Length: 496
Image 1 (cartoon, rainbow, N blue to C red):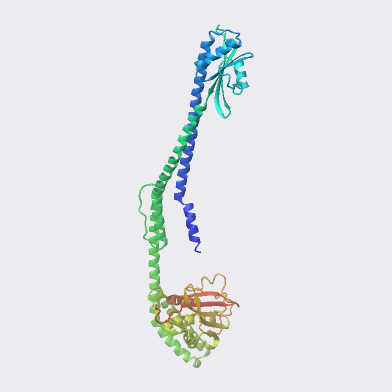
Image 2 (image 1 turned 45 degrees about the horizontal axis):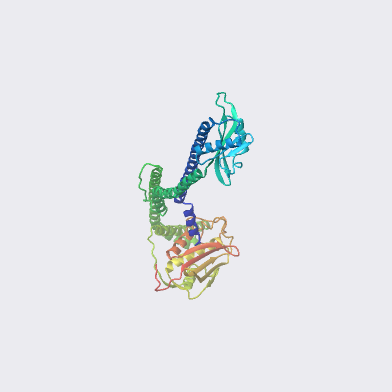
């Protein structure tokens, strides 16, 4: 059981609203940062490459136009090489390759140009009349290759068969875009941290009224019906707090009404019971006289006199039980405790009611505890009388002691061999006015008549008054077993 609380706490921390808010903020910030980084990288790369491509195409076109004006076709290898050198000088550090049919003249004889000028680009330039470009990767580095055919200047836009290619190195542009990407990545960490801080602040703002509402709910569940939540703002949480307060108001009003009705009912029972005592005393006296003279009366009159006596006695017991319950409800019951030999007290209780010959006893001698002897007598009388009335012989009373983790206890078991309690009766057997006669056979040996349904309830109240309790279970050989448990207090250990 001790491991359940940490597990519940860790589950609450992992799945709590605060953690979920922080995670949601961080995830949104991270997605936004990654998206912004990707878009920025794409746009920057596109812009850099577009600018480089436009510059390379324009520079090559202008330079070729200027140099081709003095160039004669068909060229030889020497004139083609001079043409290439002039074009290359005008466009910077780019490598230039001029082609005319089978003649090829690169501006740098050491550069390997064939691997970077693809057949696709040569075919496009050869068949077209506009500049073409292509980005290629050679030996892990990016390059831009621009190619264009040289046209005659006589106005008919015919190709001269001369083709010019320029190879531009894109490593600088690649490094620039990579540096931009690194800077954006570096800015992602502060953005995520800032999002986490903002999420914590937002969670604190949102959860503060939730914590107040939780605290008020716990106080309400603990019995403080006056617990309320201060309403601030006009949002959904304020509506929730307002609903909670309205619910608490209604609950407090209902509780007050129920308490008032319960108090009235208790006063009514106490007043009625008290008022019945005087006429019942007179009725009991008359019934006793009639029972004493019953043998001198006619048979019908004698039977009626005995019936009146029995029912009057039963009514007197019911009134006494009602008054006893009323005193428990009014919290006016007090213990008159003294150190008592419990085995002797049990034997005296059985002897007082003439049950000594009808009940088996197994009483440990020398068991002494500080108890109210009169109330112990009430408990024994109710439990044993219940077993005699509803169970079957033999009825056995066992007195002993038991050691437990919470101290030493006196145990008093009352068992019988009857049919036992029906399903569901065990939970209700200590309820007031509850009777399980449909399953438990009424014993013929007990002349006390049908009980009031208050005996077990009064016995339990008396046990609780001593700091103990009464449990009920099925016996090992049928029947019911009622077990009284009382703390084994002796003189000097404290009393109620």
